[in-house]
Length: 482
Image (cartoon, rainbow, N blue to C red; front, side, top):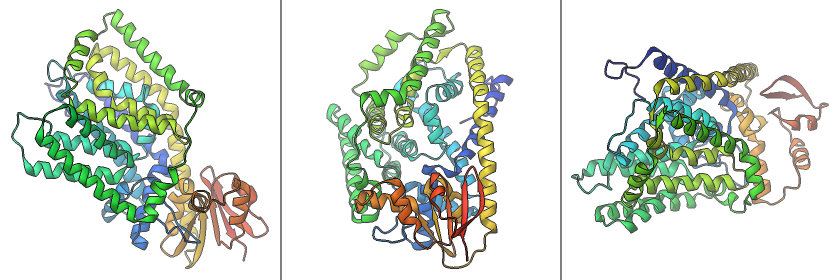
């Protein structure tokens, strides 16, 4: 995001303050995510790689460590950060990077808009509309993106690759160095998230409808790269099970279940449409719907961005209708179409947009305060973990998404066992999972020195053998009675 303030930009003081407040809010909101699945599981993979020289735990391990439902691309990024960042601050720095990735995502969208609709696009309102659109319509997508959700990062790398090499352009000289860079970026996107494979659908559709032999060559290379990566991942049975095989039998949501999950988002979309129509009726914005739609449709066949955005948005819809899906997946599909939406609504009276953006941020204050309180609790939890004697051969039991942000501090001289990983193996690999309580009772019979968990399983801990050392909203710490 370019916030350079110059006379050419003509940013008002209220607009500059809006951008500053937005970034501050995003940074504060992201610090709530210490225990969230997306960042913590990838951090766990990076820790595994550092300690055991492997990413995913062995399937036959009696005491498996932490795992992730996603490919390890973000874990490699975190592993790289750990070279330069102290372990005491690695989570904070990683979370801050999620804000940078969000800003970068919208920066790329601005470039994409210029290619989709090259004439008469005004970006004077661009960043204000980004703020309104994200906090109003795609709030749940933002909530997941702030915990370093890997799908939009992998898609951003694909977009960057196409913006660098422009393989779809027939009127420019090809730069093979840029082409190589683009292929590397796309390869890394494949490694980050499973859904990036839908790029192949987009480029195949574009190749089918456009006579561009260089692009067909470019598509073939990327197809071969994808095949190689997936074959390599398939050879790693641990990786393949946790990221692919275990999801094979997931059921789909019914229409009623999907609507119940998304009714708030549907209401927000209706409200936004009413806002746009009201503004248009009172001459606060200029839409020109027919002329812009005609231009987009007439250039649809040769518009590579439509193929890419459409293919990637499908992944959001598919994920939202599968069991375990959420509104953040639908928000991803919506946010991917932001370039097309901006083309229709960019001509807006700026004072109105600034007022609406401030109003939205005011409603966000409660979430910011909650995020700060959660951050304080997480740091208190971490502080107590640091006080625990770090003897060797201690065995820790914990859940991935809740307490690993703190218990990982003890990983160097202790064996960390993941309750969640054991549950996944028991349910999807060994097919022995009966119910939650019986599984927990079976696990708790084992001889652990510390139990560091969060949730209702606490009531199943035998207090005759374990004493509570600490607890707050982030979890509890039990130590075996000697």
